Structure formats: C-alpha cells, structure tokens
Image (cartoon, rainbow, N blue to C red; front, side, top):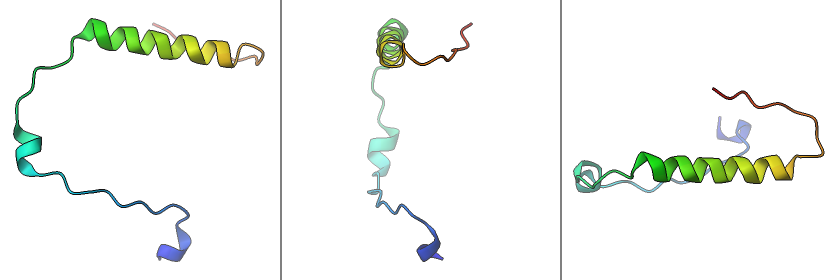
Length: 56
C-alpha cells in the first residue's frame, strides 16, 4: 500500500507531559495581527491574478 502514496513523513512522538502542561495562551490580538500580515503578503503576491477572498 505504501507504494501508492507519494509523500511519506515521520512524525516524532509527543510526550504526554508536553501535551498536558499548561502554558499561557497567545493573545487573540497577536494572532489576528499575524493573520492580517499573512493576508497582505498573499494579496501582494497574487495582485496580478484575478481572484477573490471571502471575508466576514
């Protein structure tokens, strides 16, 4: 079956301790600013191609 799949990657095991430790969450405003920056990069990259982006 593996000969039918083009991409194979190994994913390292995540330790239980790492999954259950509590870290402070990243602030929504910081996440939003990263998303807006990424959208700006994409819009500039594809500004010569006609496409639309759905926004709320």
